[in-house]
Image (tube, rainbow over all chains, first blue to last red; front, side, top):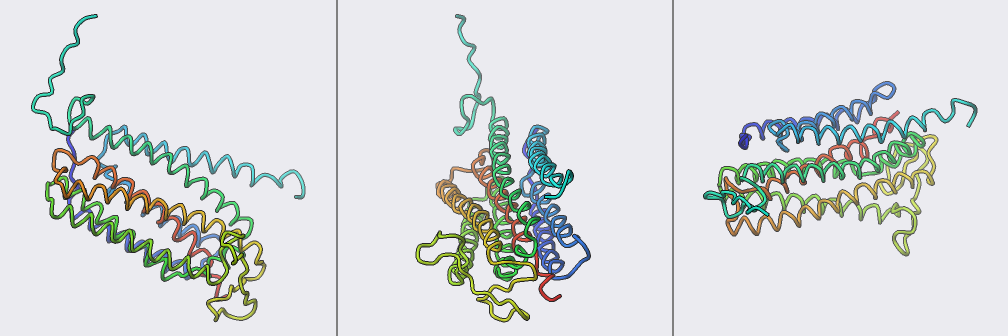
Amino acid sequence: MSEHIVSIRVYLTIFLALMAGTALTVFAGLRDFPGQLNVIIALTIAVVKATLVVLYFMHVRYSSRLIWVIVTSALFWLVILFALTFSDYWTRCWLGPC
Amino acid sequence: MPDAVPIEHEASHPALQHHFENMEQQREAGALGMWVFLVTELMFFGGMFLAYTLYRTKFPADFASASNHLDLTLGAVNTVVLILSSLTMALAVYSAQVGNRRSLLLCLVLTITLGLTFLGIKAVEYHDKYVDSLIPGQLIPGRPYNPAVQEHGAPDDKHKLHLLPGATVKHVEMFYWIYFAMTGMHALHMIIGVGLLSVILFFSWRGRYGPEYHNPVEISGLYWHFVDIVWIFLFPLLYLLGRHLEHM
């Protein structure tokens, strides 16, 4: 497998998408959405932006399976970190007042 | 012991290390190594994002009040600066891949300049917090955490902390601990990145990188983009979490 060269066109498109995402996140942050929607919108935009950076700027889309495994493992351990911690914090008051 | 079979390194590139069979394998191994490092980096920052999430859940009004006191314009400009630097970094890798040395040098200089611009703007923000006595604890001798508070009405004095209902000065301090820890660690990574790219710039100027060999450019790029990703999350989480509550 030889190296894939991403074209300038793709880089510029991703850059414009990231700029649009930044504008959108500021725009949405100044508006009041019901419930926890504000933080959900902000995080969704951030995740999309990060995914674009990883896939195109960091070439993961064109990389070997081995790189995919490493990147996925990072997310896997991050999920463990958050899930186990919050399984404690969210359930602390279930058995009585605290 | 039988004689080792000599491995044919036919017409190999001078940059090919003896333990790799060919340039492609060497390039893959380098990128893989950097990715493994970035996984550990993600876990490092992940711990701080976890602390942020926990305390934000515990002190929502305090975090929103503190966040609103940050300079949104400077934060947004810095986001644009950093994403732009990621673009020039990606183009630097592209220039190395196609063997355009002039463009490689230009892109690296632009990336370093944008990185330093980010750090400069960050320094201005830190100074604002210093002036308003918002640096937490006793970190700065002679200027402990002691913000002036404007409790009622719409926020009009930008040097005074506007507390939303339910917020206290004490718990706002928690936000600033986390803010300085996270942006400080991010800034440290930026400083290291600028250092790395300066070394890459030097060797690019010497003409070391081309279409066959550009691992160091590519790997430094991976690091730079990672630092950009951390900021992509930091910006909305730190600067935008309570803006929508200010005018209610």
